[in-house]
Image (cartoon, rainbow, N blue to C red; front, side, top):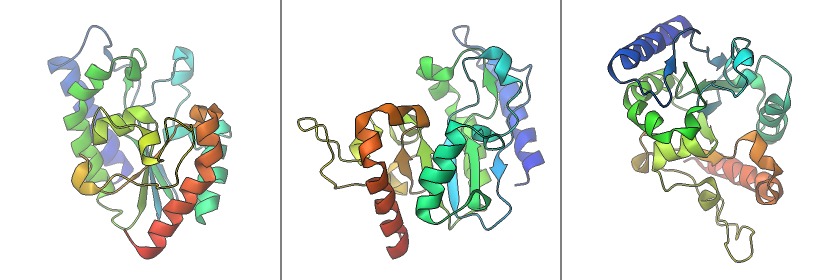
Length: 221
């Protein structure tokens, strides 16, 4: 799918849900256009899936023109570019980044998870079509709400990073979400969102999990 077609379909999904299944606790905001995916100019080797563009700062929302703000320098871009891409041997030219929900809500939808669940199917259909053109790319998800939507409400990033409740560290038996076990129908690797790197567990085990991703890629999923 071309970017224009993705945005057109996202608007159609948004407007349909706005009419048929909007929620007073967190209405869809149809005053802003959906946010375009980031599409690197090189061979796409890495897909990054975020949740939505609805940041807390309402005035700042109208400044968002690209998924995950990858067109702007900032902490999130550095995390993706330097910590993840560079470690995997990629650059941003090899990245395709998109959100499950490309349009905005009135409030951050992670605070109303039931709304995201109710609006998932239509957005998921678009996401699957969108990613079908990149069959050989590695997929990662950013943040726990995305993971819970795609792999079940009980899913947590730390489970895939083999978190030990007693020692508060990882035993190193890392894993990923199999396509047969998630709604995306594709294997993917769950990553924490950038703010979660403040947590000691994720900060200390990020490089080890990236090494795991690299090893899986080399042997083939």
